[in-house]
Image 1: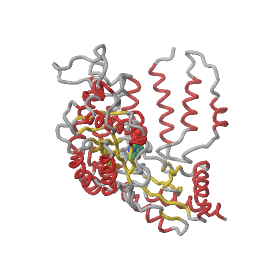
Image 2: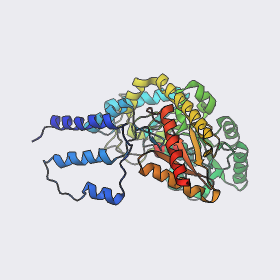
Image 3: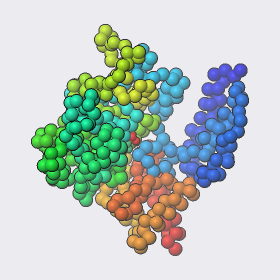
Image 4: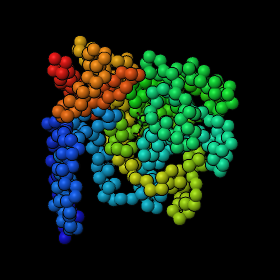
Length: 468
Ligand SMILES: *Cc1c(COP(=O)(O)O)cnc(C)c1O
């Protein structure tokens, strides 16, 4: 028998080596799915007690995986992970519990409650509440659900049958999780109104007002508006203050989707610049696993209402086999305000990151990302081969390689694929209207000016080669 201690030692040797190599060489050894399937030998039989093949698959996982902390990985809204959160996640895996009750997860429960209090204070919600969810997709849905249940008091018992029609309003570039929420919650996509944006990608309050008036005129109920704080592709921040004025008039629930750009709460100056009025909205979601670098997944949803809203809206069924009456201890089981039953412990990594970097450290990180993004914008301007497709408004750069318009989309797609398959860089792509753009996001503490220079140099060299 191999003891657990031996297994951990063996694993840590492998991890240590990986950690040393993860920022060197290429970020990926690319293999096609067919090649990789063969390499992984998926059908290989193994016998219980034989650890060698297990470690061999672990090595392959590391060898053929994408090195997400590598500076060439500029594809996604996250990269690598903060060391404290990695330590936390390893401990969470090794101890396996569910963060639904104090009984089964006492320390996690207190960490989560503590962090929610910290965040409520940062954002400026008084007497609010919150919960860690599985990500902002889920958090957006829960916020919309709170709004729905408040707008239709009987919805929990009667469903949406024979109700007045409900309408939700979002930025035309809002995240696709809003469409999913409209589906799950029984609204239907026709009741999710996508509001026109201006040339910066921000929802136009005038257009929103007109869309609401139209719905109200037809007898509908405008129950929910989401301000996207940092749109996924362009990085636009919907202005909150004019939406607060509209809320006063129409009484909807105002949610702020800060999955991406909400990280600006860590810097007082950026918070004021991008999200003035945030403390007045009804709910706010922020992903700690994006710009702030906690290990995936790490999200918080905050509600700016009485601390009974989540329980009232989300609770249901008989949980008495699981939840304890907590009046005596004063600590409510977190599962009672969640849509999940089992909950992975995400609080440990979050708490450790918070204690290690603090608001000051995170604030500096975000400010530095913004500086680097401005630098990347200058780089785009410095190459005659490149152009910005939309103005940079915050942390996103959307650009493309300039070629004849007829082939521009396919050329940029191919350029991006070659960068990836040659292991040079993984950069995002997206459509803005009809135009395919490359979206550069800097969310990696290993990226500085030099890495940005190199990224553009390689991209332009390859583009020139292709264009020749
Ligand atoms: C990433 C993102 C989401 C989805 O967040 P997940 O945590 O991945 O579910 C929602 N909204 C915006 C604006 C995003 O950028």
